[in-house]
Image (cartoon, rainbow, N blue to C red; front, side, top):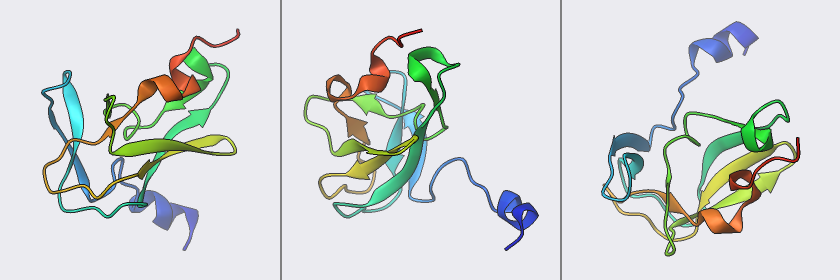
Length: 110
């Protein structure tokens, strides 16, 4: 597939999540269907020291909310942070991560 063809198929969010009003805070990510445990939902942050906290957020990374009882976790893959489910997620459940376990929330060194 050519780079042009890849750009034509780019979607800012995976097909199994959507953005809606959250009871936790503002807007949040919600499951559009059931999602199994250990599913990688996509890239949420890309390491770039020019940005606040040393990362730039993707659309996926801009909308998940914090929970002390999360259903997802951030996994670090080189210069990328991805979000992965840690439980089965049911249709219409909000996608959450425990922010306190991850360094993108902390102030960058610059």
